[in-house]
Image 1 (cartoon, rainbow, N blue to C red):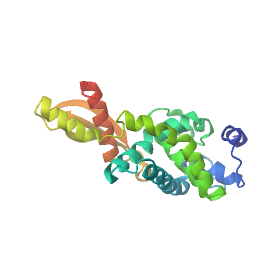
Image 2: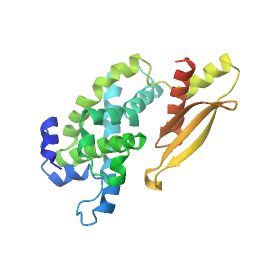
Image 3: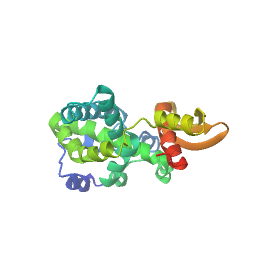
Amino acid sequence: MNFEQFEKKLNIVFKNKNLLKQSFIHRSYLNENKNMKIAHNERLEFLGDAVLELVVTEYLYGKYPKKTEGDLTSYRAALVNTITLASVANLLDMNNFLLLSKGEAKDIGRARQYILANTFESFVGALYLDQGYNAAKDFIAKNLFPLTNEIVEKGLWQDSKSRFQEVAQEKVSITPQYKTIQEIGPDHEKNFIVGVYLDEDLIGEGEGKSKQEAEQSAARKALLVKGWD
C-alpha cells in the first residue's frame, strides 16, 4: 500500500510512517498477517476520538456563544457521528488505503461505514501523536467544520427520537417502540440494528455503534418514511 499518495492528497507528511500505516490497520487484517509488527488501529481510534471531541467542542463553543449546552451537544453529535465521519473519510479516499482481512474487504455495506468512521478517528489520533494538537486541529477544521452550517440550518442535529415520538402521538396517538433486531460483530466492535415500531408495524431500521445511535438512525428513517420530516 503506497501511503505517500495519501500524504500527497492531504498535503501532510508524517515523520513516523508506521503511525500513518497503523491508523489504517483493521484488527481483522492482523488475523491473516500474523507477522505484521505494527498493531491495529483501535488505540489510535480511542485517542483520536478524544482529540476530535475536544476540537469540535472548542469550535462550536466559540462559533455559537448564545447556544445552550444541549444545543451544542447535539451539534457536536451530528458532526462526529458515524455517517458524517464515514462520508468525509470517503471523500478523502481513505477507503482505498484500508488494510482489512479478505472477508472484511468484501463487505462494502453498513459495516464499511463504521470501519471508515473509526479510521478517520484513528488517523486523527496518529496525526496528533506525530505532529501535535494544532496539526490535528487544522485537519479537522478543514474537513469537518465546513459541514456545520448545513447541519444547523437544515436541523440535521435534532433529536429524531423525540421528534418522531412527538409527531406520532399527535398524528396517530401511538408511542413508538424500539426493538433490537440484530447485533453484529465481536464485543469490542459491535454494531446494533434497531427497529422502530408503531404498534406492530415496523416503520424504520437504523444501525449504530450503540443502541442509542441506532435508535436515532431508525427514528430519522421513520420520519422520512412517514413524510413527517
